[in-house]
Length: 195
Image (tube, rainbow, N blue to C red; front, side, top):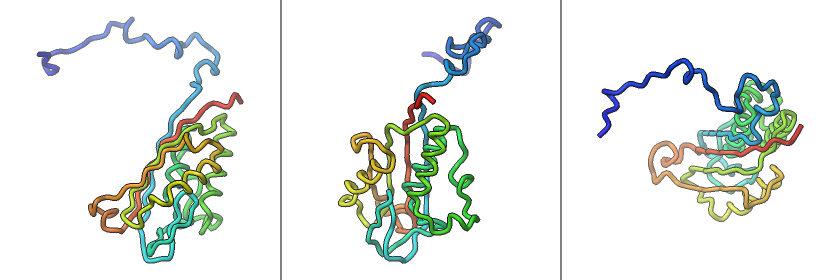
């Protein structure tokens, strides 16, 4: 059996200086060094309080709770925005749309997604696939998932079969399980547009 604590590995200068072919210093073309696809990851969490509805994926869902937020509190679109921004090498949603800026007060988060998509397009990237998770104790989202996927497809300009959307509870555990918060996660695959 190999004991990693007793072994050491030393690279000679030739080995240490080697780079994969696509990162060769002799290649002056930045185009050849830019991948054709990228992946971005985003998360978001909002506290919940008494209200009449909750907004997720741009869909207003009847609920005795609403998200506490500067905007409309759409945690799923916020996670998605962060994922797109991250895949483009940009900073997070709070940097681009600060919560102390009155322009974004109570804004519909579909507008934030449209702004992020424009930024991504300017940098030469478009989303081609997303996978998302919503952790929410109540209300149960099963009946809303088809409408949420349809709206996400329209917003992003991709087909519904390129969208994963899972709704889960926290089985009564933690802030989500106690009905105090909604947690969301999003992964996006971006493709270079050729710009």
